[in-house]
Image (tube, rainbow, N blue to C red; front, side):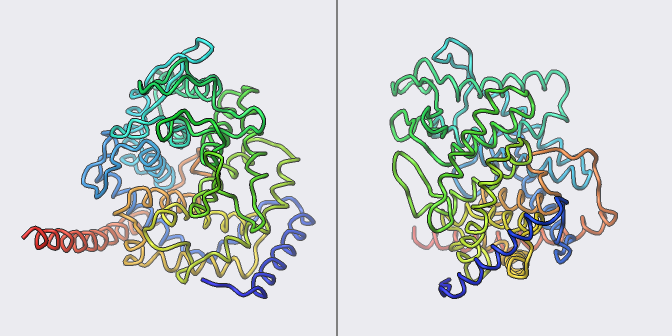
Length: 441
């Protein structure tokens, strides 16, 4: 959607005034989200979790899906987080147990490798079919293990802790040889000494150590922050701080983060550069106190919000439904929600949230967006909804399970929503199969 220069200027002016008010106001948490229909959010989150249960996530290979990413550790790790979050928001044990079942599978499927310094590390395939080592995917998957930790028995906790320790050594010390057995060389580690950014891993037939924004966000910032919270290791804090500093320096003149990979900037992937970085930055600032970086973030935030607001489509979301970059964009809604919670609240942002969520909460729109049929999109929307219901729950654990009083009614609404979504799915793929059958004839 095209936005006039005058409108962009007006939005930016409002955001700057909000920033001034934020900095001058008492440092007290606010929640200006009373306009949100929380029952509708609960119902959609539970519907998404029921769909994840239908996919038998805990087996490690999703069933009854419509693409070839059934074993993706980053997608399935996100789905596990959705389930654990939904348990924490409803008290429904079945969600917790299936989420934990996948986390145990993930921990047990780790592959050992010796680092460049002679220590044991652990790594994972991004997917069983492609068998690549991607730090970004693994960093995302590790967030599920952190999420599961409080609910594991002692034996499983020791197993998970060993995997988290091993992944940290993989990032910092690399490998003594290509663990995928494709002769792509050893790695001394993937932290760029001059910048603190992280490289890809092994990518497109080569060892790739140049800065990659998604690795930096998901492995450097998100994993680094959570690993420091767990272990209090100064080396992990240093990694997270340097990675965050690099991210904050990556904001462009348009207010957005750039998709940096292999020494290039790919403008076609701009939404996902910001999507993946948002949760990581929120986790960092909730976990690690760093006044210097916090002030830089506050300075960047108005222009960042201006980019988010001015990039919306007619539905109030981003991109064209189901396209590559649009599938990786919904955390920009999380950024708007965070703005409402931290003193940036204004009518422009409230209306943007209302429009986007209002559109997405219609079942036919949720389905056309990709919920139920695109597995990564389903997970991202679930995480966005979970954070909307309880701030920071996607990367932390609440002190207590606080289920809503009308849970029975919400469960009924979620079931009705599931029936509608299943009807949409059956209709789409029945038509697809019939078309394919006619083509064969």
